[in-house]
Image (cartoon, rainbow, N blue to C red; front, top):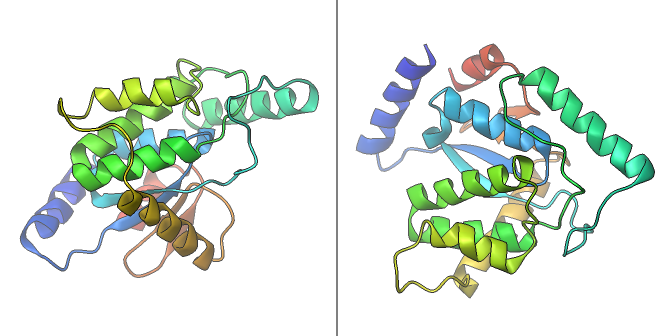
Length: 206
């Protein structure tokens, strides 16, 4: 069903200049955001979604620092919950959680250049952190990930115009009245919070 639904909505997106996408507010260092992003890919629905990166924990450090004690236990619990929600998802326990400002800025810039390449970068950042444990607050790590999706000769530093978009994303996220991620918002302003089962996602997109 999800494949047929995706085809119908993608055709509407292709032929209608007034197509309004579903909005996904998400953060790279949230395991539930990663799980939902992969679920939308598996369900062939990700192309119907406008990804908007927001920092749900802007106080986190850069570079990433190892978490210990209660913080480490909390992170281990989050990953365990995600594994129960999405048992086929490839996810490993990272050392901690990094600040995601640079990664979101870079994603915004790449999306402004080319949506498909921007979305490839976004998926790569999730994987780099949640599968490989890379510090995605590190500029060099982001340069390597971005370099896979940019033409030779295009600068790898975000421009001011793209960075202003991130501020708009933050404002629109706060305007929803929700403080958590992931958050899906439909064109008619319905909301879906968290990494929910596929059948609930089907109903939301239907």
